[in-house]
Length: 109
Image (cartoon, rainbow, N blue to C red; front, side, top):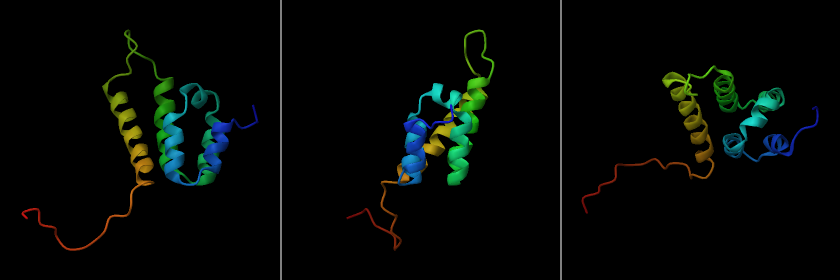
């Protein structure tokens, strides 16, 4: 299991943090569980803290005991949503032009 899967190699070779965030959000949960240590090592090597934060929440949720109905519970669901939205924000910044600074704009015309 020392060989990196192509999807994990893609994290290493991605052109930007936005591309890495996109890859992480699309990564199958099975790979997260089976290759957690490799993924974590790559993210640490890349110093990609948003990815490390997201990974910690996802892995914690995957290992959590579910309710009798298979639910994670409100606080875990909220933590997952927050982690995913934070990583999505990193992803979405990759394609946006920097905001311009300047004076106020009037919408009354």
